[in-house]
Image 1: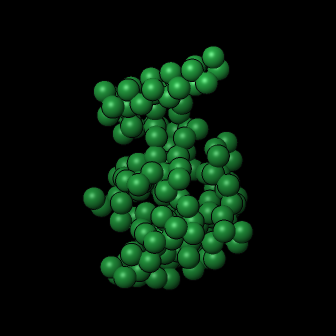
Image 2: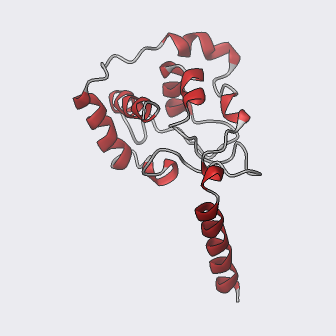
Length: 148
């Protein structure tokens, strides 16, 4: 019976998302709240991506996003994650959201990859999963999603 209920819930969520595509792209004001502690923000914002946004570097970041970094698992193939009304701030970020892209400096995003994001499921990835160089490449790919 429990498995039937789980299947029903998954079917219901799938149907909701299929019939309500705007729910996936819903703007969540909480995503604009900085995740870097105030006393570390100036330093984090001073970190600049040492790699230029060339097609080769973005492609390298994409390969890491879909491979070693397994970012795709939570953020999805299209980088939109899931932002469902009522579950604000708990699900992966929508990297295609221009407002979110504009609000976050590259250094802030690197800080999150190093330290995780308190109050979310985002865990630290550097150095356990990614090197800092790999993370910078992933961020180039993430930035490219905001331009699509």
